[in-house]
Length: 499
Image (cartoon, rainbow, N blue to C red; front, side, top):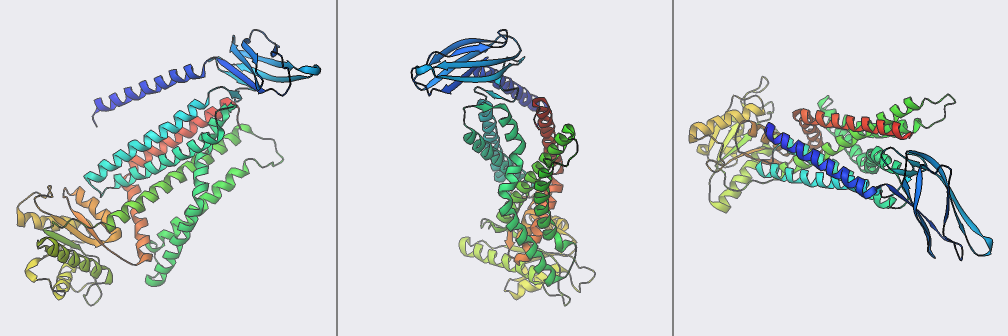
């Protein structure tokens, strides 16, 4: 995005904010409507008495069979005690007393700065609407990214942010539906902004707990099958981390209200409270990114490419000591053979296999050669197999294989219509391989083979870590925005005198 486009967006944003501000001022106005139910027969017109006539003036005072209404208008900033009296038959009377405040901005509240005011609910509606619009805009962005390339860490990040915005929109709408539009207190808006993340985390906790237990079980089984290693403990670390972060945050938020018998430091408690809010906002954001990672990885792993491919690359991943394929690598080769047969049956188009993988220090043959032998054993003609035997990782697997195709076809590979390319790997690995293909400037489509459930989940968590690292600038920016959000909340709470 160019600097001029960014400037235009900034100007449009400022104009929208100013327009909303003017709209709020016009809607909220400089009057206050005090309504109360009438429970007396033969009620008189309300009699209004004020301790300071220079603060408020009465615009209207009427009585109907059901309700009494007094409309005030501010004259000067200050406060005044207002007493409203209604008399009825038999000498009965009804009295309402309250302190009214007229603020410098013209706003009138009943019962202090955080007290009741009229039509302030419009701001809550606008906030909910903002989250809805932001969510829709993010969904549109995700669709554009997915149509361009489904293998994108950026796409996973945007989906996570969209989930985050959707959660905020739903919770805000629910809060303001419950609050309604009558007797609206200004601190309700602050409370909604403050505790929306905690509410999100607590509502999601049962699901998070079940998923975390499943993650831990999958790692226990994995360690039992393949032995202990730090890599095999990723699910345990994440599962226990999510549970502890939720529980510790909840217990910590309760501690600030416990009476310790010491003198209360209001500022310290307010700071501590907003640190808890920031903690929950981070946890909420983290959970949304995790869900989007699982979604994108599963979607990529289960996708079956269109049957118009000229080449399919089988990515190596280690051999047995005798030089034969491990079950994981055999699964990739079998999946490639299945796709080739399916394409031949449906379109009559034959496919060329590229077996990719070098020879490790503990291997008696290169992975590329071993995969070739396996394919020949599956009935694949040797003249339909090209071997790449120099690579040591996924990046080199794809780069070297693409180079082989370029030399054979004499094309750039940037256009999928020129040469159709697919790659076969394990389902959890499809997304990362697609991202690497994009970095290499090649339009290639992944084909995923299934693997053991306990191994699958651990590798999905590796993808989650990879997404956090690949999009760290975006995530750091969003975390800074959450921090600024909490700083604003702190300043508002200090202004309102809210604890």
